[in-house]
Length: 130
Image (cartoon, rainbow, N blue to C red):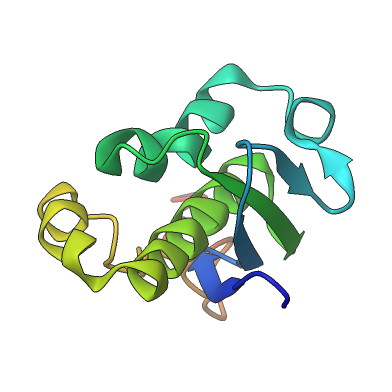
């Protein structure tokens, strides 16, 4: 009998994370590398562990993550979102705790598109009077 795996997709900015949770010792693997090897920034690691700390399930699951797109911050946010959704798959009773912390909501802030006749989304070319 194979142990149950919980799958969820997390998104943030342009990063997309596919997350699998299975009962284990708390080992987190990101793109086939240990978490400490893949993500070196301490704040990003903290963000990833937040859902477990909040629900008191730290060290109960082995996490396998496949993440692509975006940068370190976006990927960390996507992994956090994916872990949150996978935890809800595991136990729907955790929803009020995670909802109150704002982990369930997908952070929809993405880069605004560049407009024509402008340097960037909002930045204009320098105006020259003479």
